[in-house]
Length: 513
Ligand SMILES: Cc1cc2nc3c(=O)[nH]c(=O)nc-3n(C[C@H](O)[C@H](O)[C@H](O)COP(=O)(O)OP(=O)(O)OC[C@H]3O[C@@H](n4cnc5c(N)ncnc54)[C@H](O)[C@@H]3O)c2cc1C
Ligand code: FES
Image (cartoon, rainbow, N blue to C red):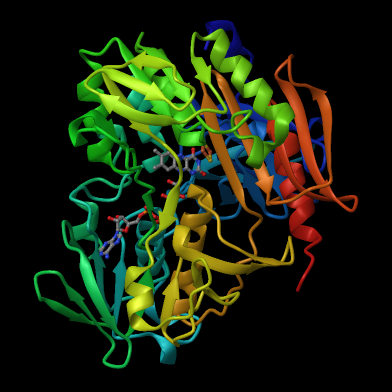
């Protein structure tokens, strides 16, 4: 930030006029060189850290809802009273300062101590506290659940079992900054290495759970080892759909789900000139953008008429296509890959392309084998109730595998969104401790293509009307997906505040089943 802008920020130590802070408004200033946001809510004034602990989003440009502030970038939610990160994707709290009103001015005084994890005795219902909790899955939902269990003061044995060799990491980054080469390896883990020992989380990596016995309350790993549980959270996520392409050799085809997958693509990209991406999915297109920024020629082959048309509609689909074309991506739409011979990729249309390697991003399938084997109720995902409990008491499911009753669409839905997975992990953790908290968050996801971020709130599988407020070409708009005049979802570009306001409005008007 330029020195003049820094200088313009008021020093809250010297006081700030109450009349300059309207009810519900925020002011950005400084305290001892740290950026601080002053927030007024009725007669109360709060002073909190100005940067979101997820990706440093500017909280002063976010939204105040009740006694919380929400981040404009990916909708994390913090308590203004304690600074606690109430809702993912941020997991760490923001700082808080004591505020004093003297005459017509507000003065920010000393920094307050960070919220400490609650004590075990403060659990909603101590009688429900299980002796042990096992979490199957070390992804977004699993980590957020483990984190919340300890934050809520759960004191019992906590085991997280993950088939992945890496400790839980920031999966969305794998197709974005990390793949583009602008995020180093050490940005990717969600928690530092000593977190697990410090919080007594028994993290078993490279360990696949093979079976679940809900009667004996036991899971068994592939190596035969067993773990008994008092409560169980299934958070096994999803697996990329694999294509059988004639002539293709495994080493030529890459999928992207894990840190290792992303590292393998980075390694291949180092010597590559040209890549074919199969699938115009979010992941496929993010891979295209990241590889373009490495100077690699990218060709996208997909059966759709317009990228992302099924999820975002034709207007936004065309916009995304033009955005990628302007960066040099070449599309072969309404087409598929028939066979691969060495560097030659032959399409159904008869076209032959040359590629050093191929990345396939044609969607994922929820990992349901364990749940199916254990006899849990399945309906294109694990069926859970509003508390994220499966058909078996004491067994919860969260993230990409869970199909839950969404009070906003009035339907049972399953989504593949990072923030939803983490928030479900958090709510499941609280319910394991007896809180009986409904999962009623409005679904949210974001996707990044070059310098354009698309935020999406709500859930629309079918709609009868698309309304565009603003201009796609100007990269400033909100696209509403409506059915019978009810707004089901809104995708937005450069309208972060509006996206937060839409989310808050949807929260306050759920359509309960
Ligand atoms: C490259 C990429 C980019 C993405 N970008 C975005 C984005 O920008 N925005 C967004 O909203 N979403 C994004 N997503 C989707 C998001 O990452 C997922 O919705 C989210 O990771 C789901 O979390 P989860 O915990 O349910 O599953 P996962 O994060 O997939 O974790 C599942 C875990 O379970 C483990 N596991 C599976 N089976 C077993 C077993 N039998 N035994 C033990 N462990 C097991 C896996 O090893 C893994 O650790 C992206 C996904 C990918 C792959
Ligand atoms: S930067 Fe705040 S939620 Fe991501």
